[in-house]
Image (cartoon, rainbow, N blue to C red):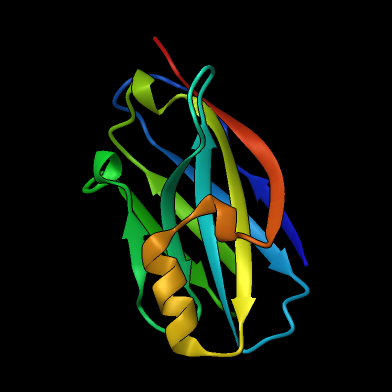
Length: 131
């Protein structure tokens, strides 16, 4: 499995960015892809996750109402639309994923959005929010 993240950059406070995670190589029926971020001096944080099998999603409280995760199954790509960005969102963002043969297992793991459960990691993309 390969995950390719893109879309980071420098944006002013209040601005928007869209991150993309292109996935390939999944062999099981269901997969979960999530976005995780790590800011300097801080622990890694699960930002948002989405399941391929249903509408299950997860958002960390700090991004609810500002970030939207979506998927294009035909393109095997997951997007993270980020709006209302603040300096606190500055971090390296990683996409990560796992796969499962059971839809409900994927849904449960989506709701946990736990970095320790992810099986595959893409490279990070830096998001810098600064004026």
